[in-house]
Image (cartoon, rainbow, N blue to C red; front, side, top):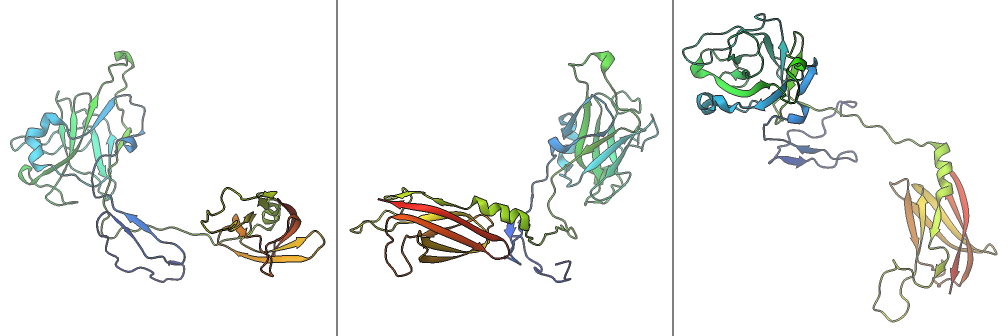
Length: 316
């Protein structure tokens, strides 16, 4: 409880992928830990720029023989920012025998706030420009957040490959321009130190609306004729339990039922956590007798809200 500076749940273990805390102050927290790390295609997109190149995400199969044995599913979001030709970061050596190569991109690990994140730039035409047919692999060391020093201890994660949209004429193809940004989003399990905050609002009463809602109070069935369809079935001899319902009641109210001549027949107390509640009555008077057929008046008294008066009929 941030407001009261009080710890309500301390060091609760998440067993499996889902856990629910005990009920605290009227609510419980349902914690779901997505342990499967994957690219979320629907959320990965151009966040800046208007390039119409298609972007293939995941792990470019053309380079699987070289990188698959050391592939990792890195749980982080990344941004690729395009620069002028040759003004981007140098790509990490693509093999044990290759050198770093010039590029026109800068990669940022957004989740861990790591600028100039390492990457392998598979520049197929050696023009120092990330364009159609080229691929970029994000590179890390042998643990998350650690940079790779040489090729032999590098780990290879998500790849991004640019592809021309063949449904668009060549003259209308738009290569990514300096300043364009593509964001790759992944699902991520919880990490140490992460937290989630939320705010609850105390319940409040709109007196004007509450008074207006009193007009919605109704009795069903009205008129009551014979046995209603929702009355409990009974194998006992005789009619069994009869009942009517008062609907759309406020949270707290007193229901008084009178004969047409003003004699008090029964009093019902209604207390609920819902603003749109209901109460049942078994058509038995406060003297323990089944009521007679006829017209009755009900009076609903809701403290600090108002009153509602209505009628219902009980027929043979």
